[in-house]
Length: 292
Image 1 (cartoon, rainbow, N blue to C red):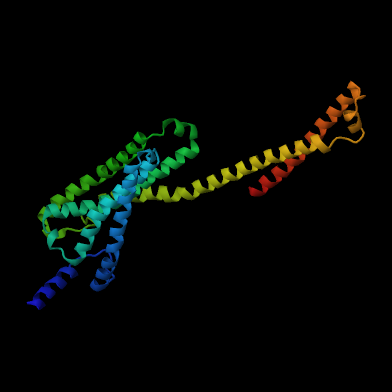
Image 2: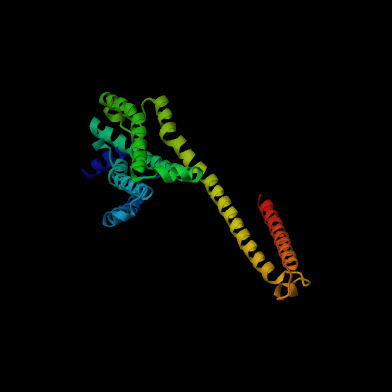
């Protein structure tokens, strides 16, 4: 009896295309057992994040609402997608029903891709804040952030639902053809892959290095400008206190100084300040040219 059950299980597993087909069944089960506590730990962390925002609503703003959306997506991913993926590697008997097969394919597609699409919303938020700060500060709100999340969800379902419906109809004719990678209609499947996964993720992860480079460049320019202001302030203070020509210093502090002498002294002071500022500007230009 035990032999027949084991033999049946082995036959079922051999007929299954696992996500990690190069691994043995035992290795795959060990990996599944190792990731189980990590998944539970991740759910607890995301629930804690949601509870924190619930306890402190003032923390919710146009940007932190993206963190809330990602937390909800990860919780749904852990509760719906991960258990079915692990169970599929052990047995496929529960996938023989067309409706169960359809919902399995739905979660395998939608949950991971929705997470990536939410990241492109965050990337677009950061690019807008950098490129159009006035527009961003004028229109930023929780409502607009939630509209972005709703838009990517509609985008995802708009591309996937035709494929899901077609595969659901196909599974009615081929009950044993359920597979998380949706084997039917390969041409349209490739189009969906690119529109909901490859292109959005390529834009997101490909643009982040350029955004960081531009941010570092802006920060460097601000430091140069701040240093210029500090240098000019120091130069003006030094010129006003110690850089007067010796021939006119007694005239300034003398009660017998004539108006002509005082006017000449002020002219010399302005010339000294202008000269010191020109030297400081030349040093800043040299440093900025070296940066480029």
